[in-house]
Image 1: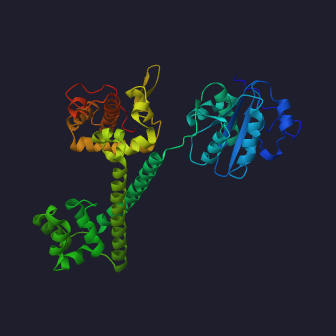
Image 2: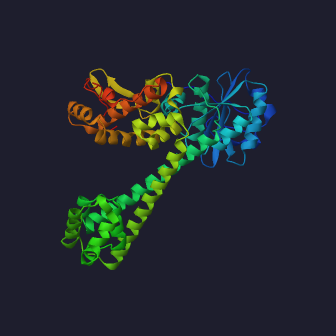
Image 3: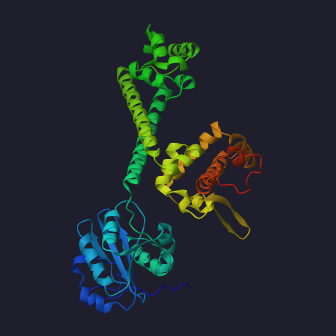
Length: 445
């Protein structure tokens, strides 16, 4: 029978507490510093802070492994009280604060701790989830317990220094442009999704002839809404030709008008025509916003030599995203470390005769993986990775997603090699006739 771990929390002599409620929080303003010093053992102190939107719970662990009852800190109003209390403790004890890198609610507290010269460490969120049952024998997670686990994991050496990073003006500008571009891209994709649903109902033939992001199709939908109105306009052919320019051939214009005339789509009411026009207009504006954001980001990236070396491999926009989210590749000691920071290192779960599949860890920023994923798709479609991808896909029994991930993994190594070693990028060398890897990332990953 599994024995429950002894309750690690002490009982305060100043504020009445119950042993059955070790996680019952007290306000940070009600903590008496002098009495707290009497209870704490000599030696180092580790403090775990679990941050939520409006408050944080703080748990102190002394060198004897005893825990104080959680302190409740209102954010941001009581940050200064907490920092002053921790500074007072740090004058008599070596003190380290442990936090999780989740969200942005803890940024103000992190900065205040750094300004006060208090050492801050980072603990992986996954570590606290896995440590829950080992901590007190109960596989539950809540804010007070999470703060206590952060303190203990930090004391056990399962944390890493996490200094507050102050970006230079150029890096801050690049980061803001990357986030702005990603936001505009997300908005554009949402409008395209809505437009696709409408076009498939009212003019399903159009998406077979022109892409939904085609400026010609968007302008036609903005002006007419109903494909039958387009077909009935005697000036439609001239308008389509002027919108498409030399990229739109006469045969394509004729086919588009014929599809509008003979469409099998639903007949539209006036309200539906108005709605389709508004969605097409919003898609048009979102596409223009993405184009403007890309132009601004590329202009800013011209001043960064590292990004310029990465751009031929994955494109200028993706290179900027990787530089902002992961830092420069030369800061990593090897290509595998850079790939691991992307969350593209492989993991496996096997036991006895049961062999689990190989998956990527997905640790690190998802934003970087998302942009690298689309860069891999472009390399497969337009670059020299297509043949390699097809061979890998066939070897994986036609599981294409695993082959795309394999291309991503190779692109990550290529980025590191080009930036760190100063070599030139050779797609033929990266995706040449050499054997494809035997480890296969899962299609679900």
